[in-house]
Image (cartoon, rainbow, N blue to C red; front, side):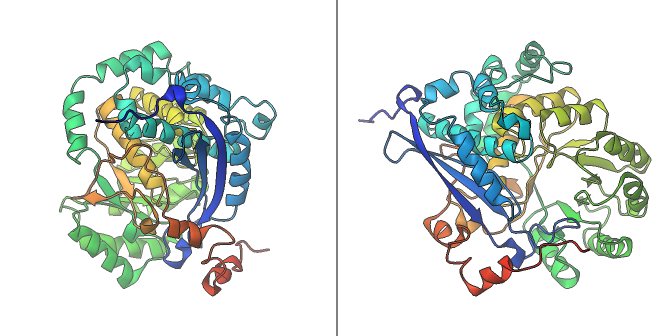
Length: 458
């Protein structure tokens, strides 16, 4: 006889714990690009403790190392807003809950709905979604895909975006997306719903024989689409991309994408890219400051005759920035971020706006932890929102520290089936990588990283 599990009505959040987790990815160059050198992929990690022994909600945000402590401090502030609440109170109207989470009028002053406060709010809300999945015994992507159009729309706060999309319009779009949904669900359960592309050979720290070696390995694994970091210098980038094209060719079914990580001004981006267009990249990602909507539009217009698109979004602050990028015809690819935006709720809002503008949604990825969340988001976008199969970035690093690591099968993401949001760390990871007291950070290697220069010159 199966014993019924807890329900949202009888689970209450009673406490929380916050952990500053930092992984030394600077040791292998993962995360390195023209703007970010010596990065250490880090997760401000929160556990929402309930009145049911052993039942916790787990949430994360993300940083590159220093600054993680700021998000952790802010996580504590936003976690207090859910302590004492039952899961029924939090999930009966998720759009209203989201509005509640961003409505502390004093903390809004240091946002509003952006930067450290938004990362922290997202971390707590990711924990709420994770806990909801564990109670319902479903992965988060399936919670959303099992919703009616009206229920999905109730997850969204439409404040600031009704000039582009209204709740009523969103419901009609989602009703149309029901066509073919059963087939798409079958693809999800068959692990063929989310094609993967690889950034593993493309980090700035890799070059020459090492880059080529990793690229060859990824090709053998079945990858057909690759992304490479650019922006360190025109001649170096031309040499790099020439090497890449010598391996993948132009007519063998491979695709190349490049990423500048915000390093150029608008005129620089246009002139620099004119010297790389011969290598036929599908798009240039983050060619300039992420807040410069009109700058992105100018770059897109200049590069369109060359057949090169523009992608951005990993540092876009909220749904309003995405609204303006779409209104200005500034992007060809919409790159939502699972923790920069306000959790699943705000990601849903951007997915719907992107769908209306017929712009594919390709979540930002590349780091362990983020990859696990975005596999859920890509499934939601494909199965429930648009019916458009896209692709999702993958780069393998430190994944052995995760309890629910992403896996790639035949260059597709394996669909996560465990209840929750695929968040959680091994006991060994917590012992080694909590900062600054974990055993790694007290070791000689860890102290050497801590004492490295912080960048910039006078």
